[in-house]
Image (cartoon, rainbow, N blue to C red; front, side):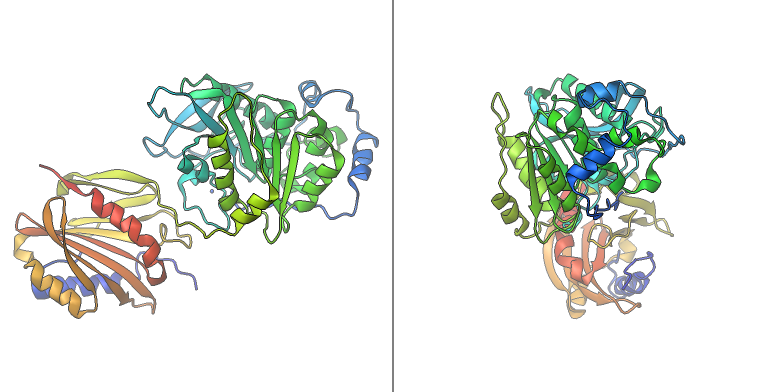
Length: 494
């Protein structure tokens, strides 16, 4: 069933609560699903190499990848870019910055200074998909089966940088489909290394899908990164979605310069390839067969696909980074520990919260950063809900805040008794130093759905201020920590 709120299915519940108020005088209140295509043409890695390097390519294979890359001029068949706006990041979590590159300044989200005077590790995380921009994906709901956000890193305490690339979000240049973007990743490293709170010897690189391929190419180009983690990278660019290619498709050299399998021996930083068996695992296995570089490590996760490895295994990587404190990297990963991590119970995330102030009501509170806020029709309060409608408790929950005058407000005891009569569990609490009723329960909607509701009525200055939380009934347990976080953050003007 499609469970979009449409912000209208709750009307029946709100009308019911308004009836409560009249009866007792109290109140109611971006990617990023890009998936690379596995190569299943039956060709061996050796045959593929012969076809590419011996069958018409003009690339001098005695050169390193860095030398070949720097000496090659890509020809774009079409010039593509975008001017998508970049959302402001949550204050105190990320800064929106510009980092210099060969084509000009490019935008990035970067973790702010922890303020402890120390130097900390940082990972540059490159998301999947063919877009070269950034948006609010880092703090969207991280689905356990498809968590492309990279949020495990900063949630675990690893400073994180999300770079955009040439041609994205109004940046100078055009999409170059894995060529110039490699230069941009190196430029992102230089920017990160310049930050006074970042340890330049502990800068890591990671990415997923197209981002994983970009990260792998960057590892072949430079040894600046302490370690590199590539989820779902492909060996040859032809296994990606070629409708996105902007380069000259008739030039074989263009493919060679964008295909990691030809340059694996140039890797000098520990580089870890991770993929689910049902994803691009054949690409991973061909790369391991092609090169005996001891800096290259590969892991195929049985029973997993192109996306399901991300949530559990980025958490493993984050912990490895935090433990990697020596003069030289000592990161090692075993197949057994990755397999064990895949069996852990999914964790319920707590959303990034941001402070909101309602001047008219004389209060501040915190709520999920992605929740929009607007006045209700009669101007007595506000409505808050996510700008997205994905299948999760962040996006399918809503909050309604209403204020009531002393004439409209009855005593809390009567209101609590009425809520109990409707099957709600009621308790007396204090919010911001004022007495309140906290009622929790489920109510049927006009659409046949059952909704979980948490209703907090605060008595203040003779009137009441009501916070009415609603979500789908089966999300109630997961959403309650979010609701509780809002309640705990409420503060009134003195």
